[in-house]
Length: 336
Image (cartoon, rainbow, N blue to C red):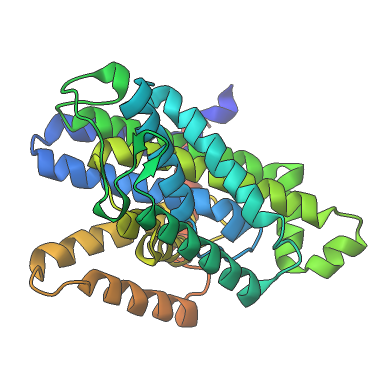
């Protein structure tokens, strides 16, 4: 029990406590919406990191899984009244199935070839969404998009008049994916994925079933991303194929993870928070220049790849470790 009363444990707990307090000091719905989006993007980056970071498979089509979760849950909600809380499970499972469908035929592909395959699948899925206006008697909206029914303040259907519950829900999702990533990083599957990322041929020589490990990673990553899509649908309440399944969504997820530090537990979270805040600031300061935040993303990614290939986590780790050592030293002195 005493091991948990150390800086390495209570500093993260303090950060979580601060995040829990934020809505108590912010009354602006707009700022709370932005804060919820910051946590949401950090969540998506962490979900992508399972396959793109730990397994080293550069997926450039994760918008597909966001769209799958969003559309499946929203259509079930609009047509049969199924609560999005249950839709999270179904949307996540459908996204995971898509992850397996994408992953199975691309198991032998590596690097740029795998990335191009995911882009091709994502583009095909986007075109299908644009050209499909009905599934049976269910209207999907096609190119015009799909408007999620608004019931007012209905917590049982994941709809709230205030932005505070959306903020806390995004925080819960982020804590879940970080906790899962922490477990994965220390699990046998995590070791297999790391071996595959570093040298797949060597991993095969060691007897690791690389195909199975990569497929599991793809399914897990897609599942969590699909769950995020359900949240996105209820927060934004409008689904447009180009926005949710297009290259911008997929690329932004990748940018956040790379800039933060893919293959690490907290790197994507840091990248998600950092770049999302920059994106919102550029929208406010340069609202006349459309797409400027994406241009800045590109520049930042290039600079980090060149000068800090491990990402922002490299800048955070050393100061954090120094702080932990300093607090540990004071703790030892106090105990003596």
